[in-house]
Image (cartoon, rainbow over all chains, first blue to last red; front, top):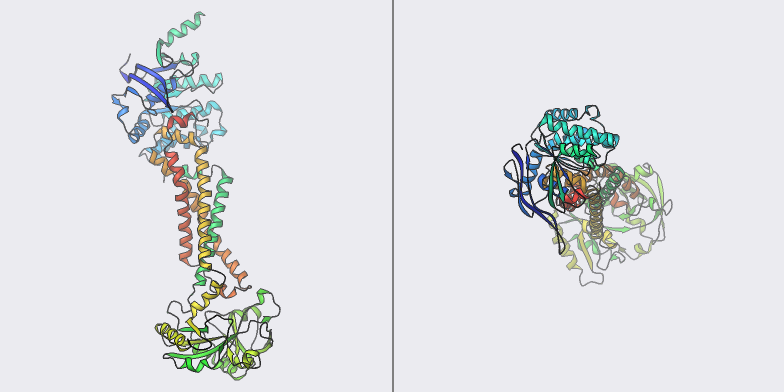
Length: 239
Length: 385
């Protein structure tokens, strides 16, 4: 494995609902290398999205330590963590989560409002990101004027516009038809290969998972197995 | 400033809701400007802030009782009193008894009228003509503009509680703080029951300096305190306010209504902003995930409420001017016409109203903004967008 970018050590997560304690993740240990493309798989309730949220710094561990590029993110305060997310993480959601009142351009520009870039520089960055996802001609379109696949590509442009090292994708193809899903996966592969983005993707879909370098299986909050994606593809071809 | 587009677009996310909320602010601001202007009119100082030198003396038990005319000579002896005029409120009807044809009709002593009313002007020849003929009257310029009377025109005013009809010729036109009255000779009423009893409704007088007004009032009150008809002497402004207060404590009522309405609109705007924020829990969670801090989310949601309120405020202030003018025009044809002539929309009133709109935005937006800032990202993302 390449040098670990994300290091997860003995991480547990317990949700508290009133007097109930619900363990979601138990003693997870995992390293994800720089430039790696990892797929998190498992049945519903297995803790995939929780693990993704912990890696992305939008949720906190109950026990254990998560380091990204040597930084223990558990030690960061709320504001510092927000700044860290802006600098290091790009989010891709299943339902795209674009702001409906903003155009594609404005949606992609949103993370750049947090930077010191000038208006002109922001415009150049946004155009470049939309160009990468193939939607430079749809800058002024509102989300409602785009197809699902196009919306997800705008969301990917928003995720990469700040040039973060890590992309976290929660079921990025879960709401798309097969053709659009393939296009999105192609795009993720390209971002991984050409732009060296480290990608952590939650998916139920084995076809999507096969695009990753490595597949991690979670079951009842425990990391049950790790499989090289190429091996998974061979298994499927043998069926 | 770079966030303004985001704020602006979210304000108009639901256009009908935004416009209805703004409309409620517009209505409230128009109401505030109107009520404030009316309050200012009630507190209007005819001396323009210099301090009035005028005193009104009435019967201690109220205007329904009259005082002996003989009091005049004794009041004239009070130090610093320049001149005294007995006056009677005629209260008759002109043309018909519709409120729009109502105006003040006061009998007075034309010989001292100009001396006492030093804040009014009238051409000398017209004053002399009025003083010379007992069946003449003078009228304020606003009445002249309204009825297009010309010098020499005769009018008939039918008495109500005084059973006689005035038949008067216009001798002069005066200008001054209140141009909504006519003045005619006391002698004209000599044959009425009041005239026969040698009584009068009020004494209107002037002192040399405003500072002498309280001293003179005190002296006059003491002068008649043990007589059959004790009196109450007071500054002219206080006398005018009595009429408003006859209808209850109007100022308190007006201010209370203003505050209640203001509070209500804060609740309306707060509900609207809160509804908008609740509908965008996922959106707020997304921008928090992208790196927006809690403080930035608070500022964005609060800014939305303030922008909404300020837009409503600007429209409200702009519309309040023609609305107040229209209302004043309407009031000029009603029994409260004397107040209407003093209604002015001051810059202070407009600034206060605009300030109120900003306050509405801050108060209404604060709680929804705090709630939005407190949203946990993972909880927000779990909600169906």
